[in-house]
Image 1: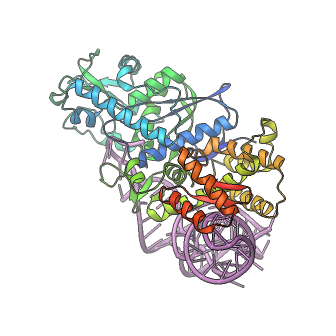
Image 2: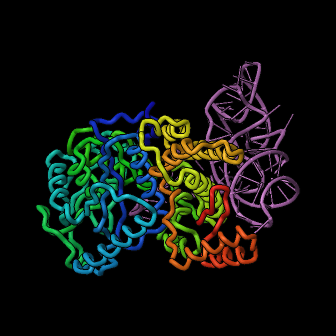
Length: 463
RNA sequence: GGCGACGUACCCAAGUGGUUUAAGGGAUCGGUUUGCAAAACCGCUAUUCGUCAGUUCGAAUCUGACCGUCGCCUCCA
């Protein structure tokens, strides 16, 4: 049984068959011109989920994600000063890493920056010119000639053959032969200030699309297994990547194209330009914890839009709490001991069913229903006190295994001070002596600090 | 205008021809349990899947029309 993923190229679910012994995966990363918003993170969390699930299936994964640190917005924002650019892009990359870390995203194996790969891009552009796929214009820019690639449009399914013949439009900034030709190299403009690099075509800077072709080629080779990104990048970015890479290498480039849908807010796409965005910290400030936010982002299919609002976040919060409460119950019974035989864990019904669900294009709704059905079944067993210690340690191990993919169940441990521990001891004693007033008083004391104490059959649960 | 996605209970959402008189979660209300809570458990909440028509022995699932929501076609995760 293999993992099936929806391939935007074929518009079908396809079996993932690795080209080599490890899976090579590329995803389009952040443009570091500002703090990323939570919509950006939907994609990044999804890439992380996919990678973690591949690891769960025991695949060795090489994941590469680019960082765009040169584009129009960046140049504008740093007023054409390379010194500002370096400071600014570094700052926002740090901000990205911080938020990624909070959301339990593991950084990819390689996170290359565009400006560190200007040479690779220039080489690639030269190759494209040599092969007749690109041309230089009078001002020293270079464009990709989409007419030269007969499969242009294969991903977005747009037919350009008609369009490109008729129009010959002059862009106000750059010259190009056909309206759909796109820039590989942009000649230096006044506003660019001292942000430019030397090239065979004069001073300038790379276009956006070429960086992904150059960096994926460098780190993953001409062919790799999975290319993922946000749905909004499908056209023109990914279409252009295909054109550049295929024309330069004559290889098929990425085999599977996986696109993550948008995060909506009040029914429309969250984006910087619409000014309807929230950062991770904005949501945290509203009182949601990061596990809830990650759970919200992954708990429905990556290929469908999700709407960020309080109703949905609260619903995610409660659902996750149900899983965590169950986890705590099992943790208490098993005393935190974990079955170590991986084979045995992978053969538990819970894991087997989870895998079946996830193998279907990461069907998270199905996977969660597996988990919730299991929780109900075992809760009944626990209520009847029919759950043995041995079963509990295997269950705990299976839950941990699932959480290696989901990354939402285990929250950071609550640190108790010496005094806290003393109070809990006192409360236990009070309860023994049926001093309910004192017991409730102490529980309320903790409640005010944001710590809940539950009295379960196996002992108290602190959460 | 072109291309595409979607419309399932109060909300989110799976299911894409028969084992579904529609999974799972959230919310509400009622009950069991508990010193009280929390958690858990039980019960209630869609004869119906945007509307209409058609194909079929049989449709939420296929076809057509219509209505509605959203995205891409310019930077975007």
